[in-house]
Length: 421
Image (cartoon, rainbow, N blue to C red):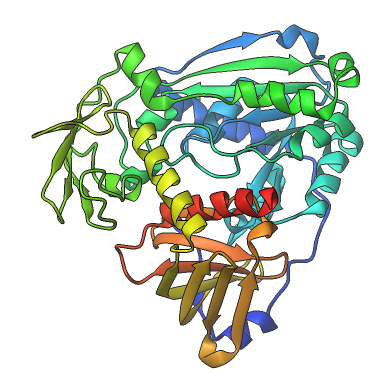
């Protein structure tokens, strides 16, 4: 999937800034019907199956908050299948509106910026549920999972649920990540998908719980491991491209500790620094072709990388320092390519410079608990996004050995360190 891109100077992009807030529309029934029909044809070849638990606790027209895990592009079609004919708005990243603003709004989408403080979004959710009498579909992880496990959830979620006082429904998918993991450059595998939809909180339960208790319950529901599910379910992924671009996730060699030297191609991951090779087996394990296998389970390898980043931060050794191509979002008509710049990330946060000195943006580490980073973003490249409610800066490292996964891990661990202090 691509987006609308135009080339402008930084000054020109700021001159056409127009991110004026508008209250969310009640989704048009005809548009949601169309999505439902299209979803049928998308899910049919995937052998989609589902279970609904406790949904009789909610009235057919009663608004609720729907929390869904974010695994693949097919998530929207799954939600359409399960929620039909309930009317619902969808919380969606603002860059998804670019070039199709009106269409997204008639579907019922509400724009927001990932990992940017957004009090307006809370008001929009209240408006949808209380005024429009529609449910709200939200992906609380905000970003796709890199390693197939749940990403960090915001601590404010419990407070939001408590204030809304409407039933909470969870939708947890199985197989969606295995079908099209983000690292694999949008390549699809032949994997059947299923989902479980459950009413986990009624209004009476919410009234009698603290927001800490609500957070604990939701966090428990969002504990999953897609690779473990594949292994335990006996799902075989036989495609010969299953390890393509796996280095996006497994960027650090556990054998020689080199970074940016791994290459995922075909069914194997190779470290060009020490020469060690691992195979991604059909049942989802990493297996060294020679010698010991340090981490057979990909999430364990990813956790090793997280701990390594944490130690770098604690020792004051972590630093991202690279040239980048910069795209900015100042309105919903286009993403503007403003040319090259330079991005640094240290214990003090982010600093982005460019546009012949006109651009100098800094972002402290305590601003957000995570980072919007993505692979093959709109088929442009791997990127990290920083910014505020006025301008978002999408930064694409020119050095392809730079891991945006490491930058996200560093941002998350740095947030924890700063908060602890």
